[in-house]
Image 1 (tube, helix red, strand yellow):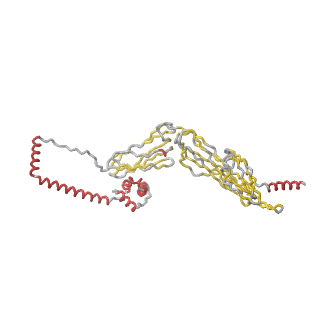
Image 2: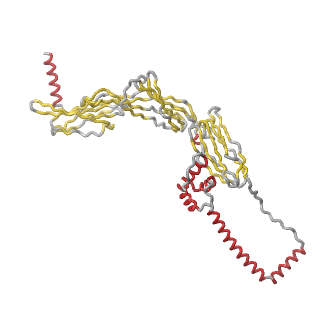
Image 3: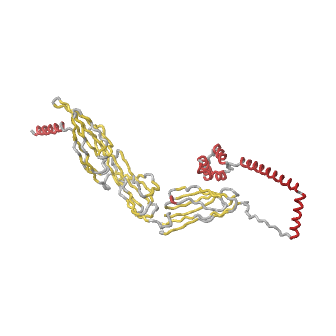
Length: 477
């Protein structure tokens, strides 16, 4: 009798399902934010048009599945479809009714409520994300380290994972280290270090990082060969930073040292002198601008600053025909250790130019003449003008002819000098090409090769064809 009762209950449920049309359900009505669930439609009928569903509650459908079974009852065949749609709800919502054409009639499913719960950091889960900051109070531009630790319990199974780093809104991301992995007795730990600097004054927050983990939870009832995967999202803690403004007259903050060095202190006229400026320490290096001093009668070519993690360097070239002094290079910044504005500078560097020609002002002195001499000279000139007019004319035209010949000769000499331009002197060649670097890619490439050959041990061959074209194009001599 007991078995008969069970059979009757099963038949009643089966018949209700057989004629139910369409019903909707979700695999979990309560879900944590970031977790995925499935929306399932069970449809029964002889002739069924499967509905087209593009999203659920405005959320993208990430996976679909289906199962079809045929049941015969008293010679009548009925098809039963189970359609599954996986999605990740962002907030609580109600899934509206779905219209389905069954046996030529429109049937509607029931609506389904989904309740999304806010997740907090799970300190006892299989996975743990944690932020550690080297400071909680900083000045604008002051660098600090943010360490992200990902801990995975030994034995925790992972099919797939998706990591979402925070956007660091309000901060400059200066660098990011490569992941470092260590093994402990309970956890496998992955460590990543971010170097950051705040951009503005006030309260800034680093939002939680997210890690989605896919784990195997069993087998799919629709296909025993396909494992069923469930996604779960883990969150880190959030970090709050208090940022203070710098004093009004500085924009550099940190702790620095500065040094300037030259390759020589004695050069020949028009020979290139190379200076390297190095700044090391900690701080907002990216806000330090190019250094280019002004020295009268000296040609100066500055290169772009090269930024590294905790240093910067800049190369400057000087060309002169006479002795000169390179002035001190100065850096003004806010010292975080002393909480005071500090100025550091290099020493001036004196450069001697061998064989230089001193420039002197041209002056003309004229001896005083007596009145008699002045009158006598005037008389001689007047007589000469009367008696030697022909000689003066001849002298004038002779001088004119000599001037024309001199100009032609100078032009030929200049042309000859330009033809024998020595391209083997890479430093001089670099100086002559520098003015055209920013407006010609071919010149930029040649300058890059010359700088490499001058400042490093590795030598690269110049493209002679391009060099000839550039010299001819810009009439370089």
